[in-house]
Image (cartoon, rainbow, N blue to C red; front, side):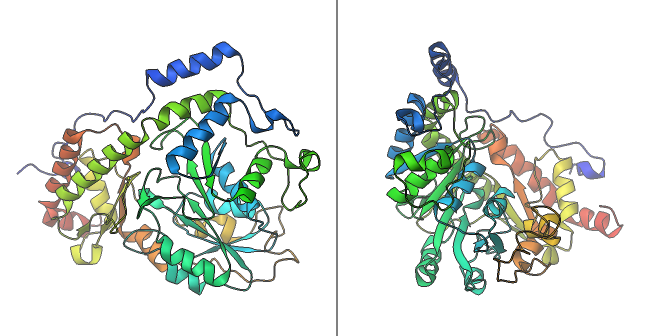
Length: 431
């Protein structure tokens, strides 16, 4: 039996994995065609036929509408911009509370602050890592106006329960589907069930345009407000005859023609790409499910998982080895693996409640009547996972085939075959 690499033995994986890159000749040709036209963007920030952007932007929106089966798609320059626009579009006002998960990229919550509203963090469920409907219900106050459900790692949140809660309390629902394009919730695509869904097109997603985002909705009013917020709303509303001026502030969230041309070609590949990611995830699960105290990700009945990342829960109490030691042993064998998300409610921004200026705005604002708390302990499941139990393989960062997955499984199996040696290493105080 070969000694573990962390203990001085040879590595299992002795080569570098190829970086994931879904861009091919088709995208290059599409960009070249745009360059020949000389039209790299065709927006005007006034009420004009070019208010909606150039021909490639509008074509890309049509492609996204048809793919997702929605009435409207609005493309933007990033998923962050899309989230900001979505929160503004549903009519969030200063002092309103929006419930969100702490287990996500920071922009999901800071998009709330952009409208001087207040993020309220609900815990996640331990099996799927998505926002927990039970915790959502516990965090609803008279000031709650919306829920942001994040489809983390590539698996949809429990939308039936979330929408039931939203209908009960008259709340809006936004789906952050940055990591879950093409994932299915029952017979519909993730992101198409809520009031507004937002997708990411930045470089390490399943498909990308460098930077970019897509917002989808079936509501005509939401679509109009998203388009206005994207493109200098305050300069357009009078000429367009818009009477609701709430949140009609000027942003430049516009996607250019080059990015749109790339996006059109990328969408032709999306189903094939996500099918491949799903197959790799299933291969990992088959290879790892028998390892002691290691829990591969689950997939709900009538849902699909597109494995933006492959999360694993380690039962450290049963195993008797700290997560960080297992993680180091896997890294030493050549496995690219991380330790999950930082809980964003514990970041200095929320601990100090300092965002705009130095006086605690918007929490200190006269218009906020609530008393949100961000102390450690409010999201015990997410906190314990981050501190002790979670690991994640970044599947969307590498161009993997079946043999690559097999050697990763081999590295895991090697580590698990020598747990006693790792326990001794751990007991000796090594980390």
